[in-house]
Picture 1: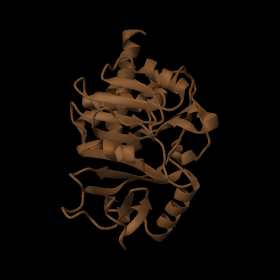
Picture 2: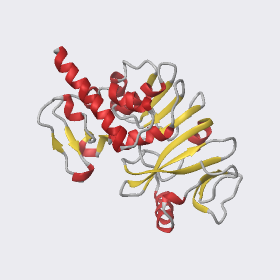
Picture 3: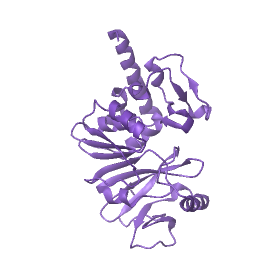
Picture 4: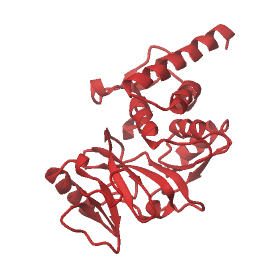
Length: 290
């Protein structure tokens, strides 16, 4: 690639990151810098690309050509259009990663890595002293993600069911890139002290909200992080849990959630949603809201 063209693409990527700083109200310089560095086109495959905007609903369209600057916008990029599988909306993930408040050297588990773009963003944020374990249940996508992440030695890809996965070492953050109706106890057990779980609860129509849960000793303050529409998590859904979630949302919005409780504490009248060994409460933990 000619140097002047490479400079143009790098400038577009920098503009993209700065635009997201404002549109997603990103306060973390590390998140902005990661968005400016990681080449999205590396993870999108050869262009032209099929892209999607929240403004246009579910109507994909094709970029005019294979210029990487087409991907330096707040759009989704199809990974597998027939499955509704996309490289997700940058403004959403910029905001979510900002709320995670990741530090250099931290360990992250990324469930549902897809082609690896947001795993690379996480790897840039935690740096070479950190660690990102990217889980992808689709073996073909896991291979693709592994190849795409070769430039980030702090990131490794595991072809595995992220719902059942248990880490060898405690994680400072666990990020779910697919919607669930219920939590995996393995995620809660894998959190380090002050570890954060970022998880989207979604209904049958794939719409719902991200919650941010933090482990503080035996307490788990929790809060609403963002609305979302996202692909379902394999292993993280069943009909009974979906019915309970639908009823919970009808009774009170996600924004009412203030904490997560675990057995042996029994659900009380503040229970928003109960699962196997855990329940979400509209009451804050004793040490206050998150």
